[in-house]
Length: 82
Image (tube, rainbow, N blue to C red):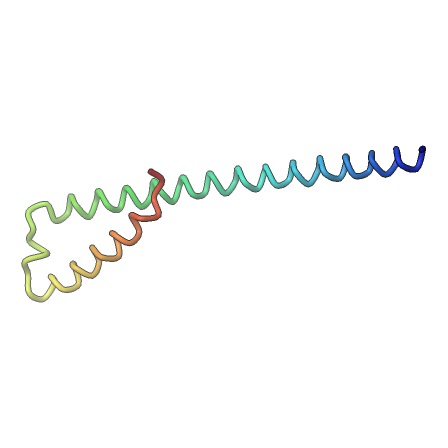
């Protein structure tokens, strides 16, 4: 009976520390994802602000590069928090 109590105490104590560490890591990752989402949104707004008149998109030499950059931004927008 005493051995069972000791084993259960050890298991509970170990479980407590494991769960606590996992929660701390999870919170850090949530903060990281939130910051990344904010950065992606800021970049998206800045790109729209830069070309609000459509000058870059209509230029022959820069238009292709601008279009590719917009495609990359659209792909990044899928990773933002909604």
